[in-house]
Length: 534
Image 1 (cartoon, rainbow, N blue to C red):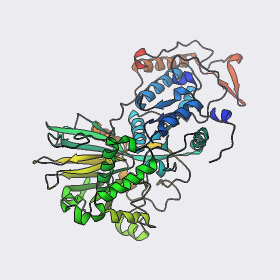
Image 2 (image 1 turned 90 degrees about the horizontal axis):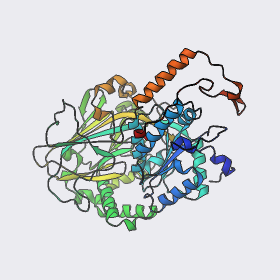
Image 3 (image 1 turned 180 degrees about the horizontal axis):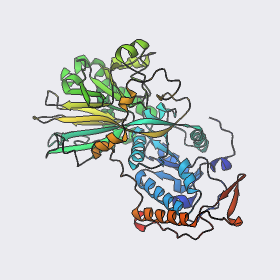
Image 4 (image 1 turned 90 degrees about the vertical axis):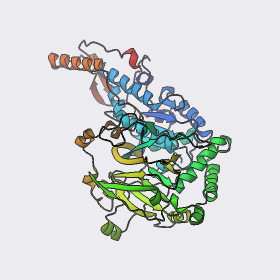
């Protein structure tokens, strides 16, 4: 992409002053607030050498303090420090801090797992003004960036490529997307070999969680609870098995996986060697979804219904975005008859419903490459639950947003429960021609079924356990009590003083507008951020 601009003046629109990012830095004299201040998080291990190269390029163009290597510092620590300092600056009368907070955007470069990590952190922090997020495709599948128009090929790492991407970010639109919470209850395995991956090595997006509801029938000794979330999909069966084989091979021989094209080629070969093109001959029926689990869905709150899974289905996908397995759309767009007869809708990203799709084998999956091709549409639901009991299979394979694991199944009279529930929404940045669609978009072909039933109001959110309100990626951001007291004192002082006469020397001319410096002209105490919060 060729973008014509003067780099120095262009980059000022994304620059965040050091004093905003690093407490103790000398305040800079700014004439204008940057129109698109960005924080950049890069997984330097993604994309072979591309992650490290991209990190160097961004740091050469922007303030070093606004570009972070995820291998060195967790994003929740960065955002907590930044937003605490912004509160301090606002209390001390800094006029740029609230504007930067209002306009702030995040860029995250990595695979789908990295992007999901950032989205989960921002969601869990529950910031008063959460920043929208743009995703740079540095993984193998890159389904999440592709769904929102950022492409699926690894980007260039030179300055021109980065400048062109920043220009896209500046012009991008904001969209709300649903997030999905997953809760898994199980007994930890005591035996069995899962080489080369240790027993129960779960994705980074799943976190151990100790507390469960007192009314939960699995709230008993010996059961372990894991919680997390996803933004694109949860899958189980043949596709997750191929992904697990790829993940295992990459862990054994990381030197062979330095190029996206090589990775995709290896992935395709593993799909063939796993036998899914001849599933009816190679794989026993005990691995079919209907034999593994009992599935229930909820379309209206409190109304669980059994979901009948056809006996031939060997893979099931719970999909939030229209991008799966490298940009394919398993749900497609139901025609008018299907919408009327089965109450189906297109796959909106913000309607509170997840699409449930089944596949028989790899040949069935190839139909997605055909025009209007789609998998077996099973349901659209607000919540879905899988209950696994003792059976012929010792394990199955599961995957969340590209991260697979080998899931042990019950061997005694115990059970494994996986429950997926609509949680809340976050803001994401998208190009104007992206494939994802909002239910609120005037161009959407139809109003979704039961949208009102799929929305969760604040009363309901407060009525459920804490495990249903967070991913476990970060603790909620809270302003320290002493800062709240300081803010209250300032409000009282300002009210007691009444209208303040601002001296002429404290009036600044900016971009043709007259602005008054906040709280100047009256003596107010300065607030110092507590050392423990830095």
